[in-house]
Image (cartoon, rainbow, N blue to C red; front, side, top):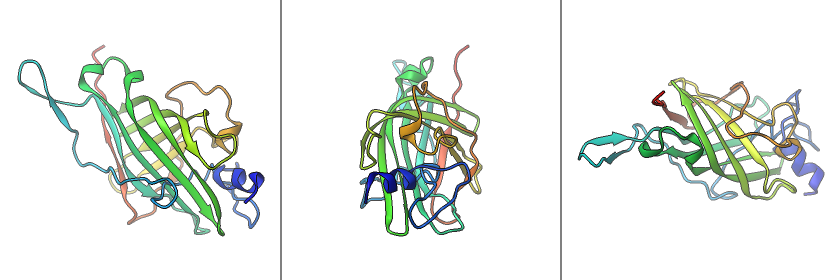
Length: 204
């Protein structure tokens, strides 16, 4: 696969078109598969808690976890996986969030994947915005790029958006600030998993 094909497949064009030679993919924002990125299913149903100094149980300040595929009528295989957390002790600083997220997009035998290390996590109600720097990918030029993902945990059919929706792929996104994503315009494919958002309650 040449660089042009990989860039097209992992990127998402504004028209979200999938062709034999180029898939509007990053936009397709793709997915994390065990074969490509070694993703693990980190879906949780409740927020983990930790012991405080007073012996009380505290839930983490915020979290985004889970794994699911996106719906595409053309049949693209697009998967996102999240394991992002903000500890209770860091509730006032979303830049101290930790974890990883991964995604991949494959169509017609072509595609690419990427993995990023979390550098910010903000959640409000059931909406989360997480950002991170790509640490590993087979998409040329992706390593070192910051990307941002927005997730809406609807409880029925979750939604997702990504920072490169308007540029076509992460490589073309320049100087993205932390915790910046797009509106969650994509829908999760039913029966493939879901995402769980733990609401953030900062002490303002």
